[in-house]
Image (spheres, one colour):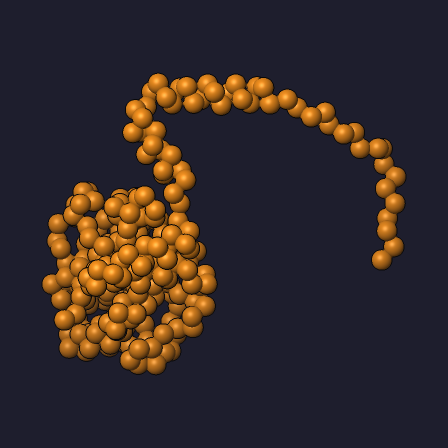
Amino acid sequence: MTPIEYIGPKPIKKKQRTFHGAWLMLLLVGASLYFTLKPSDLLAYWIKQHDLPTDSKVEDRVSELQQTNNAGDMLAAAALLRTTHQQAKYDPDYCEISYPMGDIPADRGSNADLIVRAFRSQDIDLQQLIHEDMLADFRAYPQLWGSRAADSNIDHRRLPNIQRFFERQNADLKEISRDAEDYEFGDLVSWRLPYGDTHMGIVVPGPGERGDEKWIVHNMGDGAEWQDVLFEYQITGHYRFFTK
């Protein structure tokens, strides 16, 4: 390819700006924070700004959770590991899959698929459990999709069905709390989003120095994410489910 000669005016090199004004502004902001916030508040602010999720922090937190051998901690660890997988295209659409232990292609997934996959890593197959329960009492489940019978391809991939299954298994904790202390790692929380959709995530510890906080692993459309959003939306359900 023949280079194109530049025939416009010679670019004018901008004079390098001094940073005295910027440093003065930083000093003023720092002084303002120092005199308006307690030292403990400043530390908390610094931690929240710098201790953000990374794959290495996932590995550290997963290692800690797996050492407890607690069922809730193990599910939380499985959820955290989902955040290190290749981002899947958000796809809640119907797909024919095998049964039991059937799954859609790994490069696709919805919020419900994240829940199902996390449980499946703990040898709990929500596809089979929900399908068997729907075969036993189909009318006990939400009639929202025009289905006339249980369908193992899709029923477990619908969040209202997962919620109803947990309720029927006495895994619904009933009380909707705004106190983080009432939530344990491995719990499931459902929300109603601002535009009306049902959403669900798994309670996990926060990253780094925020390990005592209750964060969420969920899929809002950009793959599995580790975020501080427990009380970000209207909570509609709180569940704790483990098989014996």
